[in-house]
Length: 181
Image (tube, rainbow, N blue to C red; front, side, top):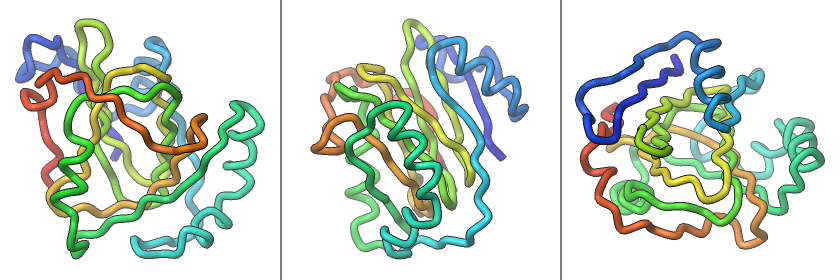
């Protein structure tokens, strides 16, 4: 089940809010400019599925977002616990970074923990199958797929080069929760 925890950035062990109520999650994130919505996931897709098959299954929703927001790049990231580079890939996303464009991620299967650093608050968003999250350009954040990843996600970007991170150098991510699955 999707979840949201909000913390003061100086108190990583004491949540100001801890909820699994979808309407509360959506409203809290909307209030700080984060798009969070639920898509229908009627197709059974597992990590390792061909990217073309994943995108074909959700073409109508992808095309709608491209039309609305002008996204230029769409890709699929798919990982399972038997991936030989899972530790390296996990580490790649764990440090706080920004993108010069929006990052949109739709979870077709599995889950991941998006953590957003907004002002003096930290928003931990556990995204599950069917969740779409849109992180606006220049929003400091990090992502954890856990030590045994299991997810398939469609990503959309304004940048034709796709995922390009600008790391902040702040160690804040090391002080907050990790996804332990």
